[in-house]
Length: 218
Image 1 (cartoon, rainbow, N blue to C red):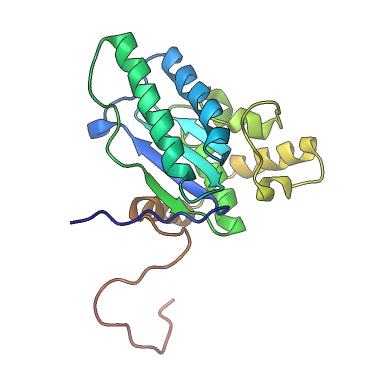
Image 2 (image 1 turned 135 degrees about the vertical axis):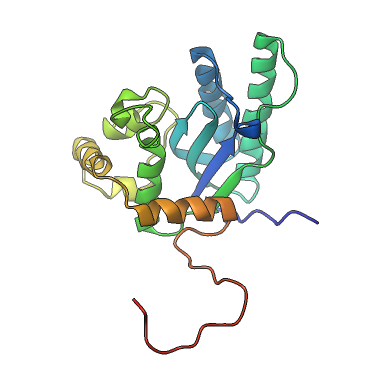
């Protein structure tokens, strides 16, 4: 059965998840994280992708990006993923892939979900207990976004720029956002949309007979 085409719209933001093969680790030491980030820094502009947030967990990667061409995400993940595996395999004298097939992705079409995606990515280490606060985790973009650090490869999303009129107040507003837990509804919507490959916040209908119209049960 042919694989479903990936839903990518130029200049519409995307949440990407790339998982380790069979749930296994894909980062083993500090040098691996640095290697992946260096490749992301190199290939994001070459593949016409703006990176707004990232989080490198031990066995998966989260990215919040805006592709500027229909092929941008695929090219970015291919170039970064393949070169990263080559470097790790050479260093660890191993062979084979580190990744679980295709990456997952969903469109992030609204301001509400763009802010939710920022928080979901940058705060990702907190929920599994890898950090008590996102500022403690080295391998995410939280410190860049929460401290308004510039000069790297992170490009602020328009919704981030709209948080305040200057860098200092934007960073403060972002820290306050991240200090509040993401609602279970938003978290679940992002997860389901990413796995399903559709736009976050868009309600999908289950197969079968349409529901009768009338009284809203909620």
